[in-house]
Length: 343
Image 1 (cartoon, rainbow, N blue to C red):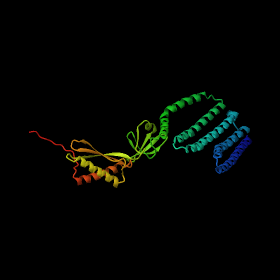
Image 2 (cartoon, rainbow, N blue to C red; image 1 turned 60 degrees about the vertical axis):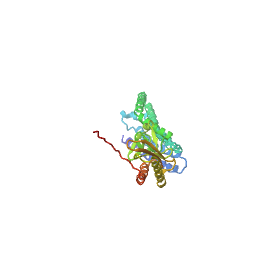
Image 3 (cartoon, rainbow, N blue to C red; image 1 turned 30 degrees about the vertical axis):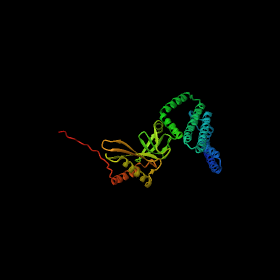
């Protein structure tokens, strides 16, 4: 018995030595594959390298236990051909999973990089994850069949689990396809300023599950993609970054309306000429809108060169209005209430 145990240990050590030699060969092959233009040799070497080494050790252990009678009788089933076949299936599944995953990762991403959108990038991400699970599930089922274990309950359970997973992940799936719709439809891109519901800010990223917006006050808002695709989206950056602002102006009753409009027009032209904020096209417009309770109400429509300078535009106009109205003697009214006492 002692001799058999010694021979078994020596067999396992021999297997470890062979695995070590295989590791050296694999490393050499990896370096050689890096010098070639094709990626196929890299994929094959990466797929078979570690599984083959583990397989050599596992088979050497199996041979040692089977050949030298060191396993107790109650564990004799470990030496059956079914166990050896299961080892082969396990190694084959490992190789197939790594091989298919690397093919999708390398060649799938290479194809995805040639397109403008990132829908195919999302599909590649999904395939990378799915291919491993599918191959390993098939491999485990083959091992169970090889061991003569009834897999019908497992398949039924997998079906129920898949249905439960689909129901639980419906938001995730919805957000994934929402991101794909955003990519294809392109209502906005990274860097655009948008408004979704009550959220207003610049798009930072468009992810698989969500889109991130940096608001004007610097906060980060994460919006699920399915919410964006089901909401109205205002894009201030497209098709032109210019935006029109309405600036209200009030003057006191008794003011010369024609003169007020002429002064306002001169003020706007001066702001267009001497600031970097306003565009001369489309042309600004000035309208006398209504007779207010205590003032005459005008509105100035001006176009800013960009959507992200509303305060600068209003400041440039209002500062000039205050100075020019004071020089012209045009009164800017304040709310007044006249009370009459009946005697």
